[in-house]
Image (cartoon, rainbow, N blue to C red; front, side, top):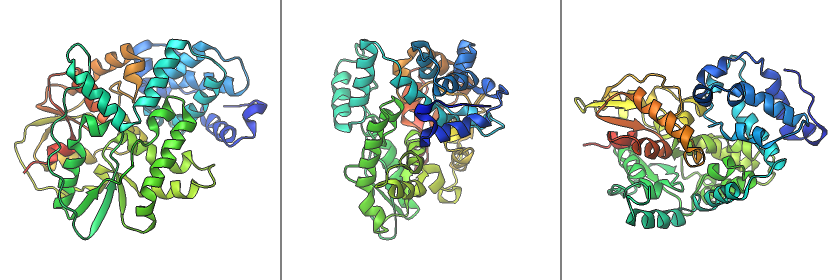
Length: 394
């Protein structure tokens, strides 16, 4: 695609990257077949192809309107289009650049600004989120919040030998402390000690994708600072992610902080050490089981499209004795997408309904991301669990 970027961005690192991405797009339309919002809304401007056209116009200096921003807002950033694209268009990186430009050239209404500011301020703070959640739970069902979390259970005592860090995250400790505890127990049985670093909270993804991009980068720097002493002295062999949404963000720190002279090298090192949990647990670590019931695995977009990891979790569940249920249209998003379910509830709930229908009627639904877990559980009576909890069975 030919481009002629405007002076305000042409010679910047973002402009050069955007131009390189835009030139790869041939407007073939393959992406429309796997775009969730296009499937729901049927508007080409709510497809990757249409949004690329809108971003190209904005980057070339054309007028940007609230309508332009709305079409970009409605993108889930699921990146299914990247998996489909025959030309290798890095849509996720382009939309980060396009959203920042469009945000700077438009102004949201006061209610929308307040809602997004509250989410950007409150969600990345684990203690604040936990306190707000506990208050909300006192008033269920008048207030629609998740129920009280299952007990985490005991963490194994540290052992000598292999050690890995695990990210606690911002909302997962309050919503599902059992996930990291289960991961620690499973890895302990394989001879690996898993532990959380003090002060290691939000990965930065929440604020970054709410278009508070510099504030999101501040969260990234803070997380690097919390981890760096342990990484620098070689105490850990990997940084493990039990939430695929955090994992795809941390794996891209090297890119997201590449222009930061102080943090670029550290960020690249952190990214190189980061592994999704399914990358550090292999089938030979799991005792063979049988007749544990049927399971439908909902592979989060951040796992299958963002990290391009497919099939690993399913193999682990089969080894543990679960019978997999075929999932139709497994590539499509469930509608959670970070804060998307709060900002675009109608589209989100439609996508959740379609996803639950595609998962069939298993004994349990497994997933790999805390956002997907809570979003799906809110729409079904079938238990929804993180897959590692299903492996933590003796």
